[in-house]
Amino acid sequence: MTKILAISDVHGEENENLYTYLNNNEIDLVIILGDITDFGPLDFVETFINKVADCGVDVIAIPGNCDPNGICNAINDVSFCLHNNIIAYGDAILFGFGGSNPTPFDTPGEMDDDKIYRQVYDLLANYDYVYNSEVPKVKILVTHAPPFNTEADRVENGEHVGSQGIQKSIHEFEPQINLCGHIHEAKSLSKIGKTTDVANPGMLRDNGAVLIDIKDGSNYDIDIISLNE
Image 1 (tube, rainbow, N blue to C red):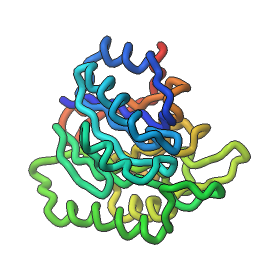
Image 2 (image 1 turned 45 degrees about the vertical axis):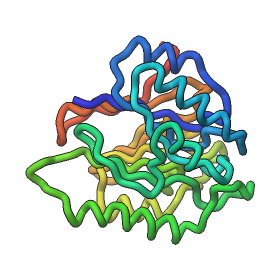
Image 3 (image 1 turned 135 degrees about the vertical axis):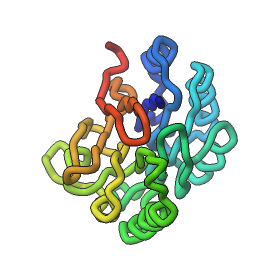
Image 4 (image 1 turned 120 degrees about the vertical axis):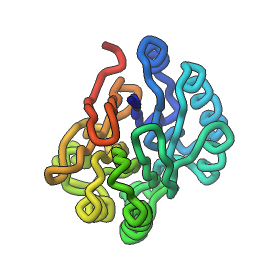
């Protein structure tokens, strides 16, 4: 069994409810889905990740569009940056890609959606090539940007602003779960097709998180939870 808690969009603000939840519940891994800082400072990365790890959990993170240059090095100094990487963790395989498709705000971690598609496609394809169906694993795509045209990418006026590259990759490879953030007001749990759960926990300061309880490599529960309940 593997229990994973995912949080996103910290933006340099700690939330004591996170530490209380981790100390009172059995969690194996915390995944931070980007925007750890609010355009810096990078020193906050070490402070925050160490405080999370001190709760007795492993920590993995990806950068967001509001994290400055050097963010992956700062993450790797204290934990593991999953950006453009694949790792096995317990009963899961984690595929990571940080940053976002272009926004109106010209933030540091933006990139062309075609590039996002190519990179995410390669990550998923590389694993698909060697996948052993006799040893099932829950495939979790970890991105900062949400996939386009989902509940996770809907802004306040109802417009969908997510990544079409991530959406296309999910349609092609059908990971069981996509964890994402970026759109603060789009806290949600929905599906792409019949196969992929898409979960956006919203901003950490609003107490949202995603809890994944993997029973084995083919069975899991996923929920949006409130850290203050």
